Image 1 (tube, rainbow, N blue to C red):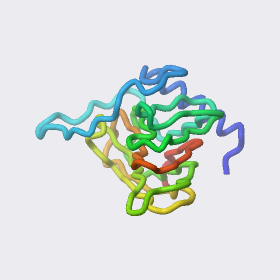
Image 2 (tube, rainbow, N blue to C red):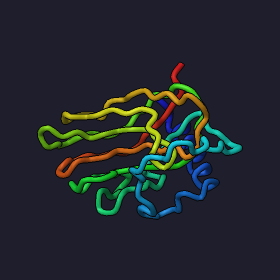
Image 3 (cartoon, helix red, strand yellow):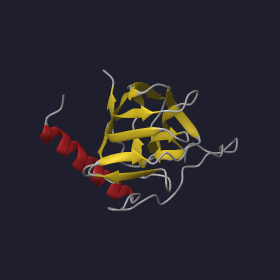
Image 4 (cartoon, helix red, strand yellow):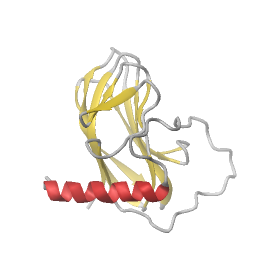
Length: 179
């Protein structure tokens, strides 16, 4: 378990990286919706930025979060779904080095309609390239999952898609290199 000082340092680094990318403004709500279109064949690979991070952490008590209009809201450091279907969270669109990462989302599924799933994934290329995903079909803590990036990528985002009627809460998330 990380100390408060380590979590604060990680959060400050993540905020600084977000500011460098210009993708998140403090106090902003959803500025763009994640794309679901597939990239046309033959497009060149993404260009990798000069600074590529090797871990990523966001804590909603101090960091902003992108949420699709009407799908979620942050109050007292907790992102809470409204019950509307869509992307509860997406972003932060930062470069991430190649490797295998553990994705740990500090949150829980409090209710989910029968036969439905909350989908967690790590994507890039404006949502067109999914590097790893997991589906949660039961009430409880959100489980961790692993994701492997075959090469350095830009604009990495962690996304949570929720079905209509699901109740999900999230406080933070972290992508950390697997040893």
